Image 1 (tube, helix red, strand yellow):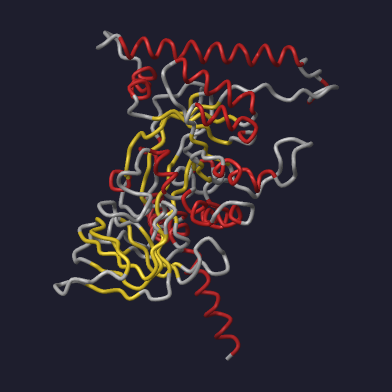
Image 2: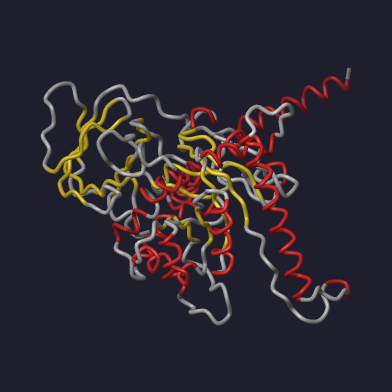
Amino acid sequence: MHTKKYLFSLALSATSLMCFAQANISPAKKQSKTIAITGATVHVGNGTVIENGTILFGNGKIISVTANGQVPQDDVMRIVATGKHIYPGFIAATTNLGLTEIEAVKATLDFQEIGDYNSHIRSIVAYNTDSKVPATLRSNGILMAQPTPQGGTVSGSSSVVQLDAWNWEDAALRTDDAMHMTWPVTPRFRGGFGGFGRPQQSPEALAERTQAAITQLTSFFAEAKAYAEMGKPEVINTRFEAMKRVFKGDEKLFIAADSQKDIVAAVNFAKKFGITPVITGADEAYLVIDFLKENNITLIVKQPHALPNNNDDDVNMPYKNAAVLANAGLNVVLSIDGYWQQRNLPFMAGTVTAWGLDKEKALSTITLNAAKAMGVDKTTGSIETGKDATFFISAGDALDMRTNKVEQAFIQGRDINLDNLHKQLDKKFSDKYTAEKK
């Protein structure tokens, strides 16, 4: 009996803790009334700006975007945004957002599987809409993301989601948009002994190991392509089955590569299989710009707040990289590693503007360019007629951390709640210290 009472008490305590930990911000309801926002500066996302713009949207879609537009006199809700700015929802590319919650708690990490070839892995089914992190991103204008699996050589498929949903089915804007892989890289050789007194491998041995990994990767793709061309197989191979979409062009191929040698090798590898890849990382892409332009390669570059790739590189190259590539005519997307720092994405784009890129082009690196890379540009990424009404109103420049103040945000026309745990804690302790002063 005592044991039963103890177990009941323990279960009750656990339930109470779970209830306390649950998110208290419900997803917004579907748009019910046509809305017109007037008077704001509209940053379209494609490089153009509309002064004193009017955005009319209903049923989750943008009906019209005009300068000094006339608002219909029928049943339309009006929002006056004079002196404010409207931006497309920012898109966080190649992130493990929603796949991890607390880095120090292994049970909350769900972005990597064991093994080198995990093409059958789909990040969308692990995406956690109850995470407290996305709400902190929405407050800075990040309204969409690309949860991406990591690890191994072929990591699996990412998907594009909007950040206000009950479950992953509601969140999905495009499932399985891209297959992700990492190009095999030769580790940098250092003389002497490695850990525990063991001599490290020679440069020749390391290069041989890398070549063996590339040979294995080539074999995997060749077998997967043959599998895709054989019609209906007698025995289903889940890894090869997942690769069919890549060879058919229904799913893009994202390859992580940093050095100029690896970037060229990765692009040529994909071309052998009739694929135009997207290169992520791209630290030394500025050294092979002509090659990238010839092959129509989109680049997803790392955050500018980083160290140079090599000791003898220009110390400012990480800051200038996106601007150099975009000004050369390449489609450039800006990204940030990890998940919790994604809220700083617009400020990284702001940094890029200080190092040579036009502000509206910098905006495109986290809006329309990202949408193009993920294959969702027909429905989102810019404020244009017919696209999803996914945008936000800011009191100031959203790329400047001093003036970014998101006052209202819409995802597919739904007026979302901009509260988050950070704001709640700020209010809690502001109230505490205000009360102590009285």
